[in-house]
Image 1 (cartoon, rainbow over the protein chains, first blue to last red):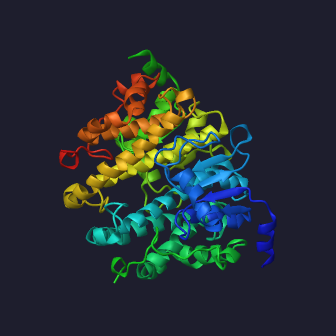
Image 2: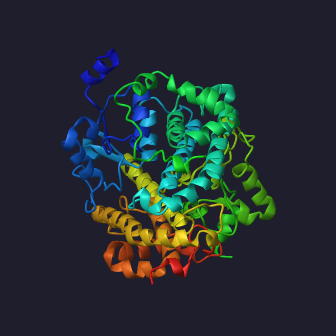
Image 3: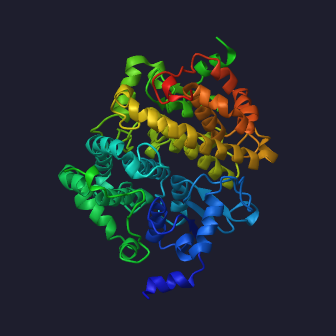
Length: 268
Length: 268
């Protein structure tokens, strides 16, 4: 057991991540913030087996819930974050919606920019990266999340062409320009200000997922976005907290989730 | 000129809404918060003609910008909100991404819940409503935003079936349960707490847009969601600020934007 892992186990978890087990998915955006900050947390469904996932399902996936026992309203879908003692009357707070969780968490674990305008801009970049994340999902599921990929392959092939030719360059161009505009402070490595924020971890995760899902497309475009691929992407991987995490068992493999590799959807 | 309109014209606008002219679109979520709060604002592209829209395009639609002259980073897409004096060194703040703008604006115009947990939950509901807004757009544009509807009609027909049969009831069920869980305070009229918030204006706008886009589907489902259709939807229309706004010329008509009425996509 490494020293950081031992420390994690000795510390009582403050944050509980509630998400599906076995996949990175949208939960990964939350994990990266917690790991980068070295904040103690429990990944409930991955650490507590079927009882853990039963908790996730009861709190985040119920079609009949009107709220939990701590006075929190119902949750539309995972991920959610539960924080003991932070809710009404000292009860547990349950927060849902990925960008809402990140905006709540980042300043509390020291990962949000201190300046108010910078903090707003970090949330703005996060939301744009999560839009790209959603569009990546829809590139293999353009018709219905409730259907298999195999039942919407033709439509996915058509959507993936537009996604690769128009959407990836539009989003990456925006990230590249954001890095460029902040180059004086961020040196191409940080999107907002001069240190790591949840904007960086979130954009990094979408790019990493796309490198898995569309490796040929991204390879062909690397030269268009030099700050992203020469400074930002490799730099974030080496950040304290993240480097150890990315090499650990806690970092789950991509499979059949948000980011999927279907060679027929990638560039030829 | 009515008294509120005269008051609007006498007051120096603090908030500038930057969005496409002539359509409600995503700008409407911002307008509703400003109007409900009676906050002075300028709807730049609608009030200042081609020069106004040129400003929107320069600040929100440039494919080469690395930031504006006030030190704000580039914007991916409209809407954006500009606030004179609120940025770095007393310069203008430029904030983008609809949920980010709403989370910034609501507490400043008195429309966010005072309690911290309630404020987080309001943002959570807003984000879920905006997800439904995005899915509504994709019901007529499942393949590419860059193509005409006519070039993706077949795929839209297939996606709209899933949208009507699975997605609308899932989202509406969530809103209904949120109203139910908060019924003691909100009386079925408010989603969070006991007064109007940006959660209410945002969910209301999505429902209103869907009543335009899918009138038969919503008519057929009204009895499934009694709080939404008997208390919430009609109640919000009567709120101070909103009632006058909805009857005014400032409230733009739906047309070929986010919410579109294609009878062939609606229930038969």
